[in-house]
Length: 273
Image (cartoon, rainbow, N blue to C red; front, side):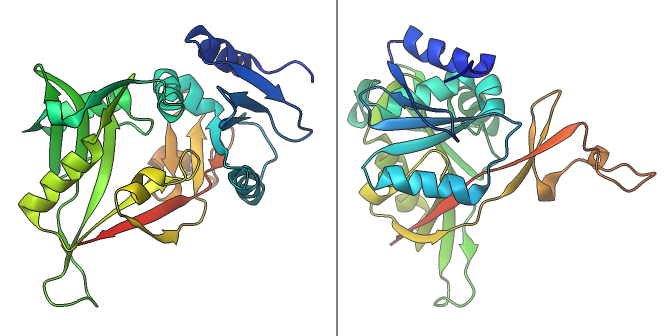
């Protein structure tokens, strides 16, 4: 099987430290572990690799046919979002504490409050949003949902407006039963969009939560090129690269400071109202 990189050993140790069992899966190409009862397989991807997005998608589809969720865990995500990764795996495995949304109340929150919560509890951290709401229990925010402004859609009927659900997250270690729907319906009731769209990260999700809430799969987006700065492990999509990415004198890429990775795309879902 060979000696695994230190960060992969840390994944296994950290999961087992919180009571999540792991088993290595024999593979000549990938670093795979079965997590928990076997309903989830994790593909641990080092920044230095020879993989192609097409191969990872085929691997996902192979396990999906077995009703097994495969998640792609990149080295930089583990090193920068370790607590959030463990929380997400615990959630997928159904190991979280459960709270019923009916016990919570909806509150409006600021962008800073959303940032603080999502940076602590969402794999992709926070994002700017027009509308931010939280579910509060005993004066503690235990879930957050963030939505975009409503946009008029050309080519649709006159006045047709669409909004995006940008982020949803629960407090790490907790699943708020009905929390997703409660925040979604609150937004729909108050702002009356004609549809709500959202994206599921294909590296981590099969989109089941969206389908259970009535969303329809509208598109599977192509894998995206991402650049990781090696000293900070900050990720940049190609259209958001900092100016320092390019060597102004030679016009070349600062290749020794950045490493190119990718994702497996997104699942675009739309809830028609």
